[in-house]
Image (tube, rainbow, N blue to C red; front, side, top):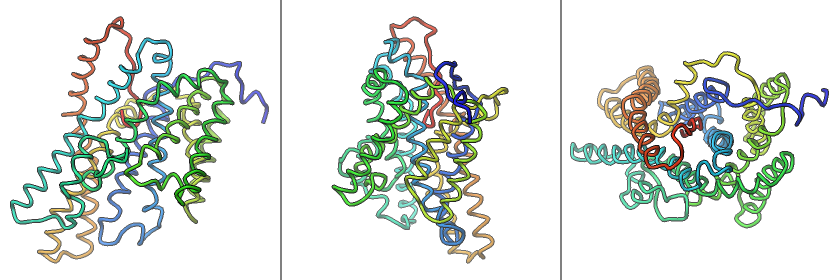
Length: 382
């Protein structure tokens, strides 16, 4: 491969809506739903088909965190670096992007538990709905050593961890702006490897197995790796053909190694290459359908656990009362997966998107920047 396939002398591609990154966001959000639902059928998919359905949470969370750092850097990096957007404005924008939907889903779960208990149908696993765990989760402080936060809408721990990453982002940005792209890439990869080795040495397990209560420690090295990949992508032109083949090869290698075991570091490298390749591959005809699907990805992430709890809370009662056969149980399981997608789309269009439009208008009104300085929101959680 000629060295001209990787060059600092050519202009790198901007990321666009409706392109490969958007497609990846929607695919990963859909796989997150499947991962959360895989254990709710008559037989867990991890037992009946392949263990990858269980350890998929590790892969998908890694993608989610790296992608967040990558896209936020490419979308907001220049504005924050030049002072057009302050670090405080950046944090407020991101905080208000995730918190309202999170609170709505948390309070919805509270209402479901109270209503079902009043009707005499107690949760099948009451340990997941302990009241002493609720406060840390509603306040999104469970990823910082604050007691509580387990159960309820448990996947929200990663949103909690990302809030800390939003705070750190301006300082990460100052660091990478002083270095060249290859140095930043080396630091991003080396930083994760160092964090992983420290976790093994001090705690006896890898950093990706960090307990939920210290999720920020798990998230920050991955978020920083995404920032490093973005800085590299902005400064180094990669041949579209090379990017395409690298992305396909990394995806195939990821699928291959998962057929045998987790292979955490190899899988992480594959995910990083896939994200880097997606950002470097041009999209001649951006798809409005892909763009609209990707815009729902955050709603898919934040609502699917609530849908799963509500759906199977009802269907499990029906299965026990009417002794439904296995085929009917699988039909109900598939209906639950479909319900998660449909609810996410409805929530996004009817509630979350209109609310975010009002928040954006409020943020523009309070800002002293000239009108017209706006930034698109294209991260997985955005």
